[in-house]
Image (tube, rainbow, N blue to C red):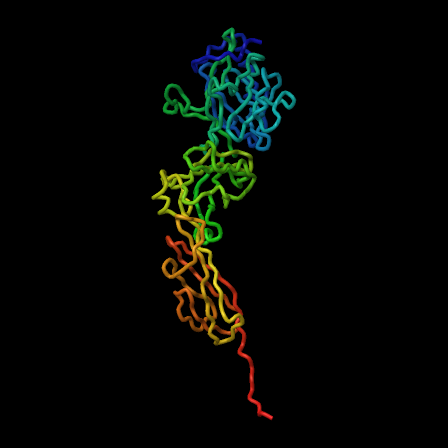
Amino acid sequence: MANILSFKSAKVGKKIRIVPLLFLFLLLLVFALRGGINYGRAEENDNVRGWAWSSTVGWISFNCVNNGTCGTSDYGVNISSTTMNFSGHAWSSGVGWISFQDTGAPDYSFNVNCPSFCGAGNNCTACLDPDTGNVWGWMHIVSMGNDGWVKLRDAGNLWPGIYLDTTHPSSTWRGWAWNGNDDGTGIGWVNFNCLDGSPIPWCATSSYATWVKGMGFPVVDNLAAPNWAFEDACVATKGFLLNWDLQDPDAGASQSAYRVVVNTSNSMVSPIFDTGKRPSSAEQFSTTSPLIDYSTSYYWWVMVWDNFGLASPWFQFNTATPSSTITDNIASNLSISPDPNLTFTTYSYEFPDINFVYAPPDPRVDEDVSFTDQSYVYFPAAPSTPVPCDEAICSWLWSGDGIKTNSTPTASTTVMTLEYGNHSISDRVVGPGGYACTTTNPIFIDLLPKWRETKPE
């Protein structure tokens, strides 16, 4: 076979030198339009739509729905949502049938990029890598025999191959494929999207594209961080919760996995956290890892996979766009971060450790009960060193249910009388920087002891 892989530097196809086959092509076309040839399946099962363009052979249709010929010539190309392998046929009035399910491809090494096996053993010539959107392998112009293999991607990245645009909701194909031989036979470059016209897009004069129906790539929206309000920080100051929403054009789509990268610099290289691909439907990531530091600004990125195994591109948290929101510690982030739109910032020191005691230990109805705060707070200079609360650095608020009287609800000690039964008493402490926490403890109030006067004997 001639060297069909020879690289041409310009995206211009050579004129095809297969004139003796022209009569065969016309016969193929007549048979196809009359229903004499039916390579494809029902068009409802073929999810590839649209057109590609070759300056040598003209338009290539990937589904009979494009030109309304399904009643007489039912054909189409399909990508399996489970294996990501291609099957079926496209049609060109210039060269006839173009197959995605033949044997004898020049090279099957592309299979290492396929999620499932794709090769001569299962009549597979091309596959989709859902993580990258790259299309690997070949399509075959049947009438050209061994000279008809069109390469969809170059493993050495010498030229831009075919890929699905993961940022486009309808999974539009982009890029170029190549067919050429040493003796000059071949159709040259095949373009799959008018946006890739050279040197300028061709869409103004001829708007066309190829896309995949019902296999839209997911995107991510409504990124939010750190979602670690005071109530959460009181449990673990050095932590954060990152949220996002899956957006997918396919009905019934759901998230199957996510990957989150967090770093102290605006780079995904050598990150603080990289979760890797983590199977989960949860649209959030939280951590209280000791790797997190106080008063530190963090950048973060997320990508997701849907239930078809298709991956989104990376999305970076960025509050300059409507899709991202910083929820907590905003003032500190604005003052500390080098890129406040791209980061969230952790709290500067530990939140108060709240505790209190009361006496007597077995209080009764209408008996004075003394509640005394025994909390600790922290300062920026020593963010994890506890300091006992006093009136100079703390303020208090005592509350609860069943309280009849509360002598000094905003002091470190208060005296209460309470009703009979089980109740809850809360102590809220505000420490340095306005960091505030609340703890609530149960208390049981018993009845006063019963007595009666008796006559001494």
